[in-house]
Image 1 (cartoon, helix red, strand yellow):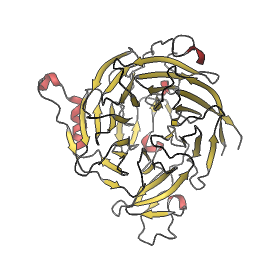
Image 2 (cartoon, rainbow, N blue to C red):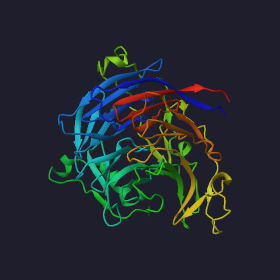
Image 3 (spheres, rainbow, N blue to C red):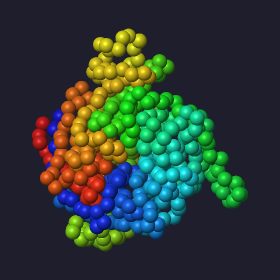
Image 4 (cartoon, rainbow, N blue to C red):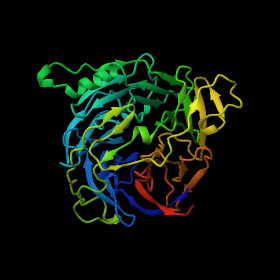
Length: 458
C-alpha cells in the first residue's frame, strides 16, 4: 500500500485576522469537489483549489448584521435546480441559505433559541440538514420546503450546549454530542421518517398560510452515553456503523455500541454502502470564470458559479445511496470486510474489528481504538475524514495537524504530523478533500493553509 505524505503548498490570510471557525469541502456533487468554504465573523468565503497548489477565492458573503459571528457551515444542494447551496449559522441562531449560482440568500431558517454550533448535510438527500445549538437541541430541516422536520431534545436529550451533529452514512440515524459530556444516537425511522416524507410535499399555500408544519418532537435517543469522555465532546461522527468522537483529552476514540440485540456491528459499513455514487461524469460541468487571484490579492474578484445539471435525487436501498443513469461509479478502495461480533465472554482476551483485541470496555460501549496526539486541551477543534473515510485529520492548539490512515486499523499508527514554522495558531478545522489528497486547515489568526499529497512510494 502506497504511503501518503503531505507537504505545505500555500497559505492565505483573511484581512481582518479573526478566527476561522469552520471550513468544509463540497461533497454534494462531483463537479465541485475542489470547492470549499470558510466562515469567520459575519462573513463566508468560497474558495477553489487552484492548479499548482494555490487557493483561489471565488465568492464572499457578508451578513448585514455586524454582530453576527458564524461558527458552522455545510454544503447542500437545491432539490429542483441541483445548484450548490451553502448553509451557514452562528451566534444569532439563524441559518442563512446562500445560492452560489445566483449569489443570493433566498431563505433564512429560524427556530433555534441560541447560537448554532454545527451543521451537517444528509448523505442520502442533500436537501436535508442538521443543526446543533446552544439551546440544547438538534433540529432536522428540509431546505427544499424550508420546514423544521423534527426537534431532538427534551426529557432524555442533552443537558447543555450541543456542539456536534452528523448523519449515519445510510441516512437512517443521526449523532449528537455536547457540553454534557454525552454522545447520543437518534433514529430517523418510524414517525421521523414519515415526517421527512411529509416535509417534501408540504405546501403552505395548500394547507393555509396560518397552518405551520407539524414539527415532530423526539425526546428519546436510541442510545446515550456519558462514559466515553470526561469533558465536552466537541466533535462526533459515524465511521460506518461505528462512531468517532473527541473531547479535550487529546485523543479521538473509535467505539461501537455494546447492544445485546444488535448482534454484529460493521465499522466497515462506510463508503461502499453509505456513499456509493453513480454519476454521469467526474469532470467539472463548466469552469469557474475569471482569473485565479494570487493570495496577496485578498478576497476577490468574486465571479458566480456556473449552473450544475440536475442530478436525480438519491434513493435508499438497504443503506446504500445511488444516483441512476451514470457511467462512472465511485468505488471505495476500502474493503467492505471485517466486523465486530457481540460476545458474552469476559472483556479480557476478546477480539474485535478484524481480529484486533479490544483495548477497553465501558458500560454499553466497546472502545475499538484510541488515536492519541498532543496539545489539544481546548475545545472546538474538529477532526474530519475524506469522502471515503480512508484518512482522518485533526489540528491542535499549536497549529500542527495529525493524519491517520484509517484503511489499516490493525496498525493505527500516526501517518504524519504536519507542521510549518509560520503555522502556529490554533487549528479549528482540518478538512480533507474528496479523495484525501489535499488538506486545508483553518486557524485562529485568520489564515487558511493548504497541504498537498506528495508521493512517497510503497
